[in-house]
Length: 135
Image (tube, rainbow, N blue to C red):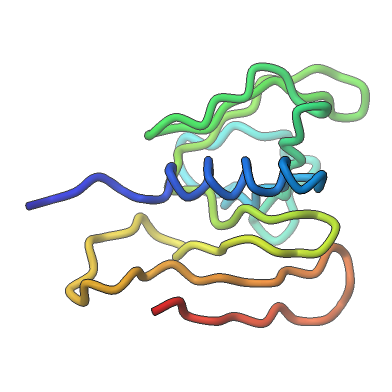
């Protein structure tokens, strides 16, 4: 039986966990994917990191197909949206704890174990993230 992607559910869960722990939720987005609408002047190496904290955005919607919100960039309000498959990760700014996703849309794994990758992402440091496969 084909199942829908777990990515939007994981994004919502990690977002809620980060906010409940008084941290700032960030998402990492593949800005080059079709259907991604973000302020291009903030894109670096084809990706953009977006602060999606309740105090930073209005109208955040993490649906099953798209993430959208209204945010301010350089003082200018802008509508931002991205297909769920373009979201590469969700994590806490303060400590980098969160989850990374495969760069492409997830497909049901042949192995019944989850295929998501947990990571501790740096919040502006030059160290590399450490990745662990969850089994």
